[in-house]
Image 1 (cartoon, rainbow, N blue to C red):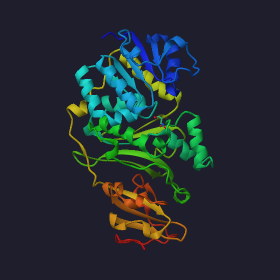
Image 2 (cartoon, helix red, strand yellow; image 1 turned 60 degrees about the vertical axis):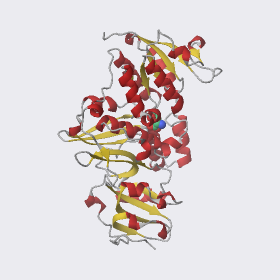
Image 3 (cartoon, protein in one colour; image 1 turned 60 degrees about the horizontal axis):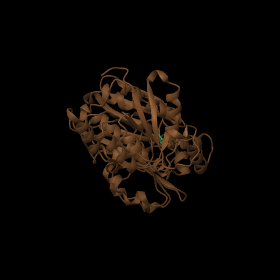
Image 4 (tube, rainbow, N blue to C red; image 1 turned 45 degrees about the vertical axis):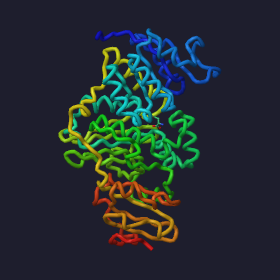
Length: 419
Ligand code: HSE
């Protein structure tokens, strides 16, 4: 395949990223990639591009034999799946940023790629500008990869930073994340941890060759965090970050979750602020490597889309080597996590669910406990869904640093129901 293959693009979507990539391609003529047609939903919106480029008929792109690349940048996951599958069946290479669609349809998308033998790239779907997918695909053999942990959602990181350091309310910070083009059209996907778990599912696939549906993975967002949790963090010198984690815990087993997490000043994540993302790779030989960059926003995301388009010039494709040839991994839902739970009524937390309770603090205003629990117990815990309960992972904090504070009413308890 020649390195300078000419790319004729059909673009779906002209929102934050779609318009971004349109502008960026105009400024990169050496790429020899031109947009022939842009499919949009609403014909009458004013757009900063010639009207003749636009159509509301997807088939104008999908059935055009001149178009050899479909770039799909819409936010509707169902429509995205229909577009991407048709494009692959029609022999067109596809670039997508739709993490929800990819995470929810991984096995089918793998089959389509195997059957039709066309590239399907989606670097922009995970961590915006950080080239994590291609690194996991090309550089890390899974035997060497101990863990992949990341701040993978820019909006929630922006909101947490603005609330804790900028003194903004949750509502104002969320509104800003929307105005700046970081948040999903439905921002519940960001704040409830859905976007992060979709990205974790894609990471798990490229890191360990597993196709785990996001619903199978424990995930909690930031909506339940209480001011007491931030006070606890400040008292201990921690930051709260929404972390997605995949960790090899045995020869063939994985621990995976998305949880708000305390991190201390020694952590690489401590200074990852606003819409920045960071991914810490734990490797058997290299020890730790950290990738850092903007995870959301028009141009950071466009940069990953552009890199995928550029890679199509030499027909680059993911080989999914870990799926087709590596160790077979599975999630171990009995793996354990150390958590802090805060709550406003003493009887609310079922401590029998815990393997061990390490610390409790009770007051009439708000109480908390620190304990170890299995992931499936936490995933199914009815008490976690009740009003006023919040959970933060302590998985990133070394045990000695969670040593009981002499100023608080700590009691080592055998698991029992707090009353
Ligand atoms: N809403 C996403 C985020 C956009 O905030 O990270 C980038 O995937």
